[in-house]
Image 1: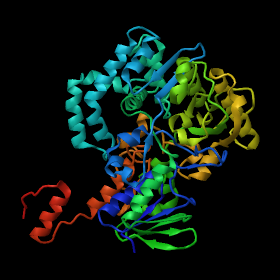
Image 2 (image 1 turned 135 degrees about the horizontal axis):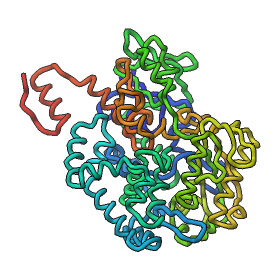
Image 3 (image 1 turned 180 degrees about the horizontal axis):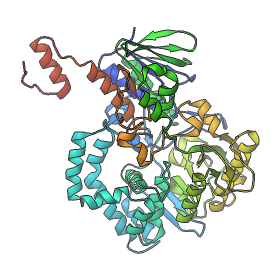
Image 4 (image 1 turned 90 degrees about the vertical axis):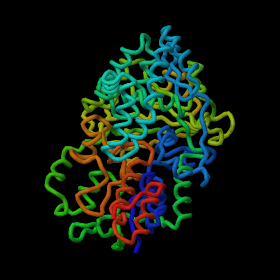
Length: 543
């Protein structure tokens, strides 16, 4: 009987399992798919000579996360690789905003749009340098992060206090207008905000766009050498080196509850697996409260709040094997690992507005990944392993284009939408389509079939909008990994701080489980040793 059962072998589930194993617990991880990784996997299915990431690719949150750095995954084979530039946002007139780890390069690209915007970017980065330790501490610890918030508040006072707090909750369009005279800096912030489901006019989108931009400035948007699954492989190797067990192809359909406490799980083939101390669920919030638990084990208010749970945008992705480098009109885009494709701020707003009224956008804002540029081993020399994804509504009521897309996403609709994405790339890289050796389409239902947590292609575990963040995430009054069922902990992106590959939800769940079983009695020496284990220093006993 393991001490803990972890449902799901995505990055959060594997982080949780590793931390429990580090504490001496026996851990068993059950994964529905035939391989681990959740949304962190790669394959060679597009073309045998090309490595393509199935889902996520670039990981600024991973390299900035104290959770993942604490696991020392480089000792288990993980290596990071960087493109020459972090990100580019080209325009059809040939202009191009560039985010580069060399701040002089970033600033020069923004000055090309309007003299003085480079200095404005430097000022934003100076504020980031002041606030970075407090922000990262607060971001990756359980909510409410009391001590981290106190430290961050002290730093905020030196960075302008309420004025800086106001800046962080601004819509990204307004933040860009206040900080920059030209469009370059505005585009970097707004494009990064749309990595989540935050429209340029949404409250808080400015803070998110600033955060992602500054992470890119400080850490880059690195990729695991060899493919995104290399990160998963390192987590699995580390877990097994500490005695943890991983079983794939094992779908859990019920969490077993007795006397208000989670005592184990049942798989679809009828196997019962007990969790002596805890069950941790790296699953979506609706799956946990709406499927894995019987309703009688939950307070009525939780079930009522679940009806108001909001998913983030659906995602439509295309992978390519290209016979040459992308022929960008803007030379600076050739060096970037990530390229944002929208012809100005108004086109970003137009895109988000079409999704808001449940229409498939006619000019989809695309995030484009140049993976061989980022990691030369991904494909043969002179070629490019590439992808693009865009967002579409979870519920489609109409097509803003003229192709009659309905959101059924059958084979015909998938092909038409993939062609639409390719036409968007062609606007900025004429001749792109002539380079396509092979392509793969991952429509919203396909993404969900490959990872059940990606409901309808949602990649964030729920909307990143303010009404479902902090103590509203995943449901009002929550914000922590504990659930109404004793011994059951939410370890997925549905919990604070949300989506992204950083391991925080898994780490928070594991630490909550360990706190629940922290020794409180024993001999004097046992209590001293427990204190040393927690703090690294001897403290006087209270008893």
